[in-house]
Image 1: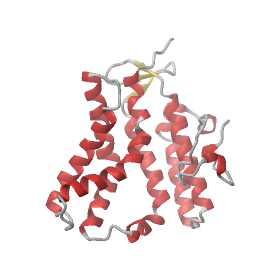
Image 2: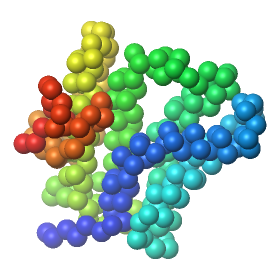
Image 3: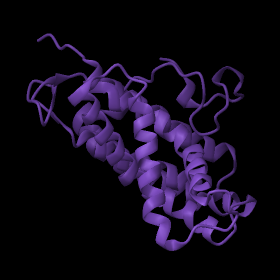
Image 4: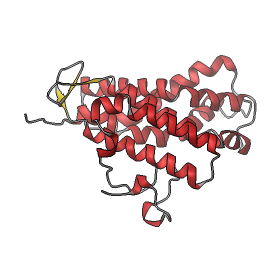
Length: 235
């Protein structure tokens, strides 16, 4: 069976890393914009406006860089907005509350250091469940879009997330995270690889890792990492 991959079918998947990269600077820009030059933190009554503008601005920015038109463009924008609203709810809330308390500084970052790998891996689990909820695996091993029944190729997703999972676990060990954190990470990984990921892509060990320029967890260039993260390995 020949499967034709369209821009629309994998457009959301291709932009997951862009959402991750741009959400922080977008929150900064939106917050400052809503302050209108006033250094006073925004009020709690303005929280909904903040999240709405962040979601709208980022989704529009990404969609406007595509070649999609009309209905396809609207569909992608709506999908991106759902991902931001569902997967980045806690991040936007924590950011806003920290600014509200006037503590968005080094303390904000340090408070998250111990929980960083847990939060990152938990987010990956949520992202996988959200993304794959749009598709179904057919009896013949192919995949289809639930809403259109159109065939799609989702094999890239397995490798995309395997890179991130292995990067987080490796980076956590290298930076000296305590055993209780590493144990929690292994538990979350087992939930991921035995859940939707296994349902759609089978044995985790057989999922190929695509070539990477940067390590997901450390943001370092793969070619200068010593030791190199498994998320950077090419099989």
